[in-house]
Structure formats: structure tokens, C-alpha cells
Image 1 (tube, rainbow, N blue to C red):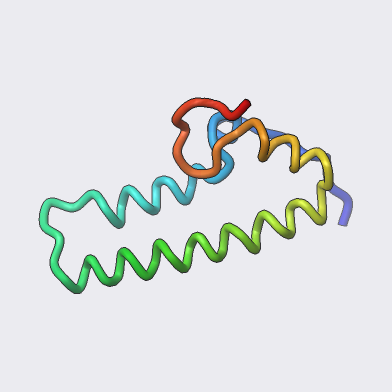
Image 2 (cartoon, rainbow, N blue to C red):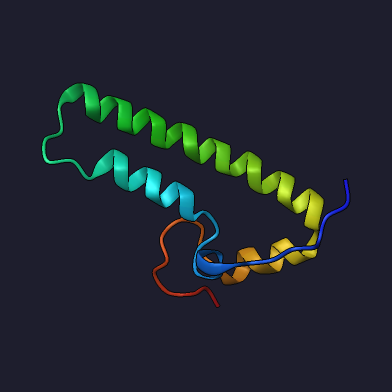
Length: 84
């Protein structure tokens, strides 16, 4: 399937995975944290980071050096500062 090339619209200029940030906020920002919720949030966070590793591996295979350069400049989850 042809692709238009690598683009970074809107939030992707500040972080590589903005959807995952929203997911983490939904999981961890609760008024009460029960033991079951803590276990669920911890396991889902671990599972998500494994998924991110596989996703980025595939993106590197697809886009090559362009995605490597993007990874070097833009943080993965939290948009706190830019990498050098």
C-alpha cells in the first residue's frame, strides 16, 4: 500500500504517542485507587510499553532513518522538553 511519507501533525510534534498519554492519564488519575485498580493500571501500563516497543520497531522498519531522527528529537510519552 502506498504511503504519503512520514508526517507529524498536531500533538505528534511534541510527543510520539499522545494517545497513550491520554490512556495513562485515564488509568492513573483517579480519586480513589483500590488495590484492584492499581494492579490493573500497572499491568496495562507494562503491556502498553511492550506494545510501544513493537510499534516503534515496525515504524523504524517502515520509515528508516526518518523515524530514527524523529525519535531523537521528540519524547515518547510525556511532552516535557525536547531531546537534543
